[in-house]
Amino acid sequence: MKKKLVAMLLMTAMTCSALAGCGSDAETADGAENAAEEVADDAEADAEPVEVDEDGKVDGLMYAEGLPIVDEGDYSFSIFCDDSSSTGEFYMMDVLKEQTNVDVDLRIMPYETATERLNLDLNSGDYADVIGGWTLSDSMILTYGVDQGVFIPLEDIFEQYCPNISAILDLPGVREEMTAPDGHIYTIPYVCGDTTVGYSPWINDEWLENVGMEMPTTTDEFADVLRAFKNQDANGNGDPTDEIPFSTDPNNKHLEAMAGYFGLPLNKYGFSIVDGETVYGGTSSQYREFLSWFNGLYEEGLIDLEIFTQDSATWEGKGNQDMYGVSIAYGSSEFSGEVAAPEKGKFSALPVLNADNGGVWLRDTPGNSVYRTQAVITDNAEHPEIIARWFDNAFELENGIGCSRGPIDVVVFKEGDGYRAIDTSTLDEETQEKVSWSNLWPQSLPKYMPIGFEYIEDNPMYDEKKNLEEYYEPYLTEDAIPSFWISLDAVETYSEIATSIQDYFNQQQALFVSGELDVDDDAVWEEYKQGFEDLGLADYLEVRGVSTVIE
Ligand SMILES: [Ca+2]
Image 1 (cartoon, rainbow, N blue to C red):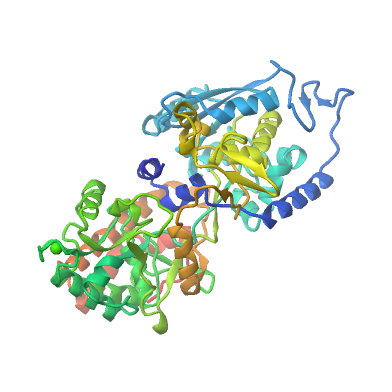
Image 2 (cartoon, rainbow, N blue to C red):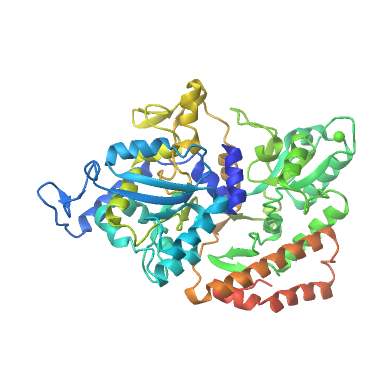
C-alpha cells in the first residue's frame, strides 16, 4: 500500500501527507461522529420541504430519502476519474449498487493520460456526468464552474437531500474552504484526517548508540552528532567511509522547514505563518541563518553529496544499505526499508532543535485536509440530485469503512460500539486481492471517515506518525498555512509567476547550500533578493493575498 501511495504522490504532486492521511486507515472519531449526525439533523430540519408523490418519490423517479434511491433500472450516470486499477472492478461499487439501485458507468484512465483526455472531452462537449479524481484543479473550477457553468453549483442540492455531506460541510472551516469566490460550491467535499507533521527528519537510533551520543536538542549538538556519524563507522561495517550523515527525500526535500530551528519554518514555496497570518520568508534573516548553518554542514562533508541530484531509487537504495544517519522523509520506512511491525523501528523523530531558543516546526495541517477539486457534477447530468444522494450514501459510516479499510463482515466487524479490523493476511488469497485498498474504491474519488476514528485492531502496528505528532505538538506553529483561491482573471499570470518564483527559490537554495553562492556575503544576498523582485515577487504575493514579507 505504501508503494502505491508514494507512486500516487509522484504522479499528482499532491502532498504525500494528504494521500497517506486519506488513504490509510489510522484515522477517525468517537465523539466527532455523533456531533456530525446532530449537525446533519439540524441541516435536514432547515431544508425546504420537497414535493413528494405517494410513493415517496421526487419527479416520480428518486425516493426523497432512505434506500434505495431509485427503482432498479431507473437511473444511471457516468463518472470519469483517474485510477490505475488493473481490473476496473471495485468492491464497494457493487455494494453501493445493491443499496441504491443506481447504475454507475465508471470511466477510469491512468493519471498520465486522464488529464489530456479530460481536456479533449470538455472541448468536445462530450463529457461525463461526474468528473473527479486528481484531474481537476482550482483553476478548472473557476473556468468551467464559475465562468462557464459546465460544472454546476451543488450547495442547494446538498442542503435539500444530503445530510452526510451537509454535516461534513459544517465541520470547522470546511464550508469556507469549499466555497468558490462566487459563493457557490461546485464539488463533492473530500475531507479526511491528516497529519499535523508532514515531512520531518528521522534519526538512526542504532547509530546514536554506536557512537555513544545522546539525542541532540540544538543545532550545535546536531552538528556534533553528524560529525560522529561521519567519523566513527557508525553503521559498524568496518568501513569508516560509507556513512552519509544527512540526506532527504529527493522529491520532497523540505530543507527550508529547518529554518524553523532559527525561528521561521518555511514550506517548500517559502511561505510561513506568523500569528495566523501567511507571510513570505524566502528572503528572511532566519532563512539566511539556516542556509549559512546548513552550508557549513555541507562543506564539512556531512550532507549527502547527491542531495540535489539523486532520484528516489538511489535515495532508497542507500537507505536500505544502512548508509544514512538522518533523513528527511514522510515516514522512515520509505528509506530504511523496514516494514510495518508492532514495535518501533530503528529510526526516531529528531527533536525540534533549538526549541529552548525559539526553534519551531511548521504545522502541516490542522489535523484534517479538505480537497475541493475531487468530484464535480456537470451540466450533462440529468438528475444531479440522484448523483449527490449516491455520494451522500457512500459517506455513511459503514460505507466509508468499506471504501477506506475494507468491507463490513469481511475485513471489519461491528463490535459493541466500535469496529474490529482483522489481519487481512488471514483471508484466502482471492479475497485478499478483492479487498486490497486499491480494489475497494477508486481512491481518487471522495470518501469519508469521521476525523479521529479508530479501529479495534487485531494486529496493531507501531504508529510512527502518531508518535511524531504527539512529540512535535508543543513545538508546532499555532496554525497551518491555509489554502486560498486565486481570482479568475489572475489565474494565468499567477501560474506563470508562481512557477518561476518557486523554481528560483529552489535553484538558489541548492547554490547556497553547496557553497556555489556565498550566503554570508551581503552583496550576494542582496542580489538574491533582487532576483525575486525581478521575477515579480510583489505581484505574486499580491495575487496570493500575502502582504507581509519577513526581513
Ligand atoms: Ca561504515
